[in-house]
Image 1 (spheres, one colour):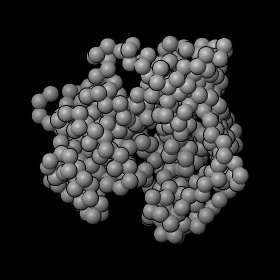
Image 2 (cartoon, rainbow, N blue to C red):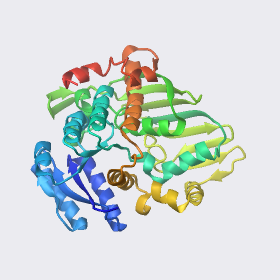
Image 3 (cartoon, rainbow, N blue to C red):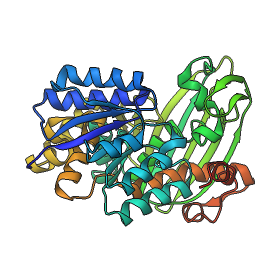
Image 4 (tube, helix red, strand yellow):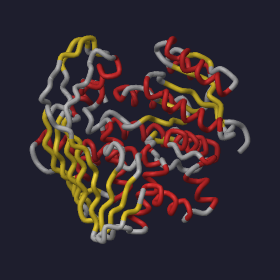
Length: 400
């Protein structure tokens, strides 16, 4: 592959740790197609911590850099792995793309559809690779379950999907991890946008183009948040409860229900019903099939997660395995990094580019838009920016 791709980690908070574990996994497998040469954050302490972690398995310590202007000036990296909070995705990615760097950007792509489109525009104008860091679809179990459902049709034709997670688990807004996650202006929305970004992408990966979306949502617990970033003392204004119905052009209908503020409740399931049986999600149901799936057929025959995965792997050629699971990695963060590095080095299209990230983003936003205006919306109208009642205050605040 030639010279190593020089990577910078930009944003050294919580999620960057998962990306670094992906790098570590690849190094343990003998992958040497990249080198992390910089850790960049407005907090030098955070950047120093990540650089030290990387040095333990990489052998060389990345340069610690404060801010993206300094990163561009240093010229030590050609590609950036951006792990900042949602509200900074566009203001981080666009200058780096304009400065000539390729970008792997954490989901959701932008804080709004409009922000996402501006990021894509910057990548295209500057002829840089833009990849969306969506790890769930890249794991072994989700790929195997998609193959079983949609290619092998092991449960027949999909008829209906019911995804539900209802419990009582308030967010701890004393922790920095959650302070920004409770504020719409900072995160773009609640779990419809956060874990929901994974669900939206997997539904698209499974069932193709959505047609229309109807959603009701509510914030029952507007808890106080002290010292939220940017906005200071405020109250939680993101949804904690919703019910959405998503109709796909293929005819599949998905019902998606969640609440984290229902005392005494504890219900969690993801059920995919077909003409010949059902597949049950065995993990956190917003991260579809990350924990695998189990098939139960009409005659009560069961197919385990392990059986589905083995059948899938046996169906692949050596070349297909390397394409889907580079260097033998089956964990999503490792795969997404390897795929991005491959795209930068060869000019190949990444597995999930900016457009794929935009489409998943638009599905989450369609839920918000429907709930905001109180009626069913067409997915395409949200994707095209024709409906933006929920997003407009966010765009206005950040001058997008």
